[in-house]
Image 1 (cartoon, rainbow, N blue to C red):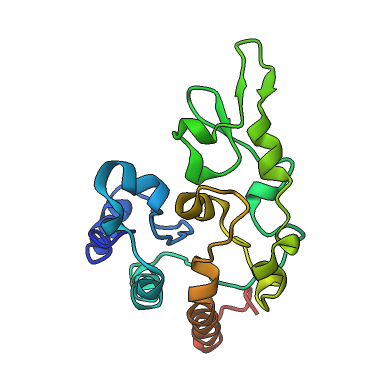
Image 2 (image 1 turned 90 degrees about the vertical axis):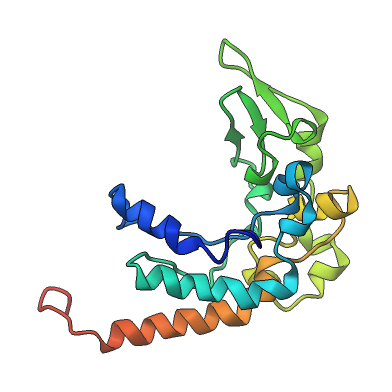
Length: 200
């Protein structure tokens, strides 16, 4: 979502239902500067202070329309999918990226799949997977690091500082309290709803 469409998201929910996509899990995320700025300018992007205002409202709207939006806190051995050695995204042109935010942006392509199926990496791949948030000063001192799924977002860090090794926090830091509150709220709804013998 961005500043322009976050107030019209119910139209999207209605379209999804019309096309038979009601029983799906949704992930509500702000559109990043990397994706929007080159075409429409950075003013369309939600800022850090906007996230606790708009995103929780959309979670609740999604629930109202019958969609599942989970904000359950998670822990994992790696903070961001960009740091997983086995995580790659291949676009229709067979360009390979480490992060979905970088798809379609040539200077973030880490390699190419050849016509005979071989992966040919470039040096950018090694910059990405060598980035360890526990060695970044701001991250290592942050209480949220064990549950952070960005730590910090490599795409946002590069977008702001033009450097993969800088730190820019975004969704987790500014939405943690709201996401935890929404998760507890969902648990209360589940506990209060009548259950069938099979569910018990």
